[in-house]
Image (cartoon, rainbow, N blue to C red; front, top):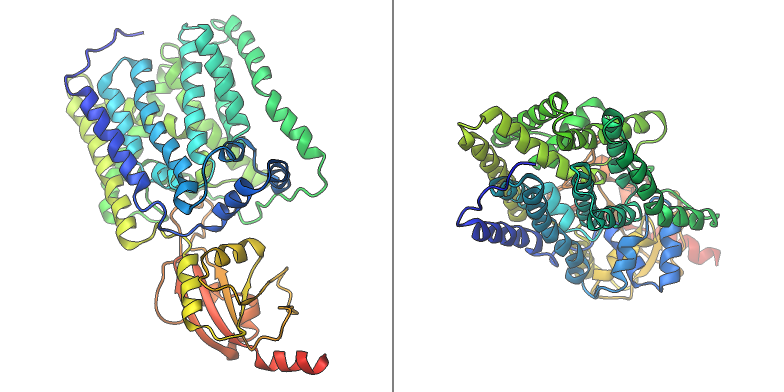
Length: 503
């Protein structure tokens, strides 16, 4: 353990500015975008009675309950309120990153760099602005990693053991990918077992205790016969997706690398690669870096292999638990390459990556791309152009609920498609049907977080036209593209007449 460095005079001011900037980016226009479908699930589960909520989470199959349990004691009356829990956790993550790095490495400048890299990281910003579990998963992964590294360094106090067990326990029942931390820890022990045998035995016992709530949840899940693991939308990843994921998580790029982002992408990946090389060369003397190495490499490799051999699970946002490791390795790599005589080079790398992340974030805000699925815009357009007796058609009840949350009138006839059924029952004859469908611009396995079909004028691209509409393309009266959604107005008078005559 190196002696603590003297904090610069402006440390607390700089730390406060970093946290405030991170908070501003996470809370800006937080209630403006309408909820996208995954957030509608969160809304349903947060507002349902607790027993019904847990039953719905269980039947969903790939969710764990802690985040939704916490939302039951948190105000969620509006879109802003629902998302604010994640935004607060996102700000807490920035604070925690500064705190953990300063205590682990006794370097205030390193701590400020880590905090800035997280505060201006578009990947973490978007996840912190979403009413889903990921900001919580990051905080728990950071706490569990911090406690483990303190234990590994010899600081085996009751406080560190308690923090390790509780953070690991909470991580397991927040997101299944939290298991990546334990996998990385196990690999580290494999290299250091001779020196850490007693610690390894206690680690096994701690893991057994931490796994108890997860095992109880699994037993609860097995009691249901209605589990439906909704992961069929995930694509099998390709080798290029590893690069796209690392670029997205460090700089915030999407499926391409715009020219202005290339310097930051190269600097980030060079720092990450150098950090990994440094960790491999110094794993005996600096096991903390070895842990960060395996948290990144082990988790990515394991998920990639499972996605190829068993079922695709590769989604960028699921890897939020490895983000602390990516930041730590980049900082270590830049510091190693710069050397003690040129610290300004490492500082320049931090500034470049942060400014690029900030530019990407501000561009998304400026273009309105943080309006990921514009259900509010669709509902207003339908209300402004509707006629008495119109029907509204969506793919499923959850998407219909997303539409109805923002519809200013409530006298439409509603229906939804079940497995592309052609015979729909609105309950009453309808002469025109508004069909709303989600669109997905992301066609790669890494499933980037800001990946949408942007609103545009003119005909909607054929790939965004639902099958029910394609079968009636000669009767489409209107079509319009919104962020993440396509809308069609279909003339169904002939079908309504046939239904009326049959009755």
